[in-house]
Amino acid sequence: MRKRLMWTLALGAVAAIAFAGISMAKPVVVSLGNLVLKFDSSITPKALPKKELAPITFKISANISTKDGKHPPAAKTFSADIDKNGALDTKGLPTCKAGQLEARPTAQAKAACKNALIGQGSATAQVEFPEQAPFNAKGPLLVFNGGTRGGKTLILVHVYANVPAPTAFITKVFVTKEHKGKYGMHLDSKIPTVAGGSGSLTNFEITNKKIFTYKGKKHSYFLAKCPTGSLFGEGEVSFSNGDKLKGSVVVPCTPKG
Image (cartoon, rainbow, N blue to C red; front, side, top):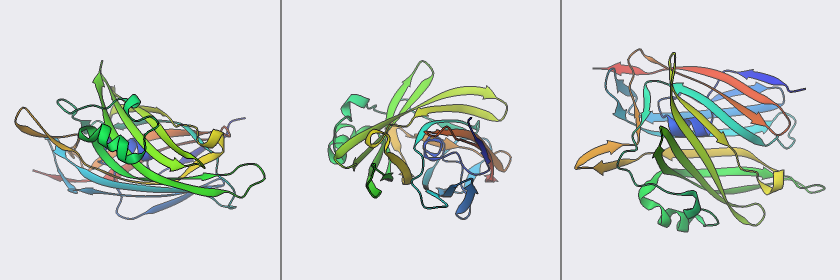
């Protein structure tokens, strides 16, 4: 029977990629069952306009572990609803296709889609093969604009790591507009299988920023405003053992103007 665990923290890496308006003053650690999650983020600027969307640069990191030190289950899917005061501006920004990133090391992936790059960082997975001690595999992480079509925006996340052989992992994140109370964006993603199912994401850190010029004007891929002093989000992550982490967050921001 599936076990549902309720948590009150953040929505994870994929949600943070799509909306930088969620941040906390200091790292937060929560324990749920055998899982332990540490989450931290920061945004610049911290004060946001009340009525107009403004560019945002942000950093985010997370660490997943277990209380008993055992290998954590692998994350399989992620979905989230994001505050309606966040937005993505993709018009005029070059796009990248998943085929341009497949089987490419980090430098080659960046060269293939350099103008579509919107963020970068690193990710670590713990790999545990039968009758072997677990080991960590860390690799660079790149985030690309996949473009908007039919009201749906695609974000591509590329990670290249030794697991144990050098492998490129591509995660597709789909973002759609919604009208659901205080929420304005919905995210869906399937997390790639690592090492044939023997690998689990344990750590990531990402810095996201993209300022570009379109028709002579400067644009920002990541935008947010703060009309009320609070930003909201909720999401769900499913794992290979059938567990689901589901929760929500209310985070203060500073209105200006």
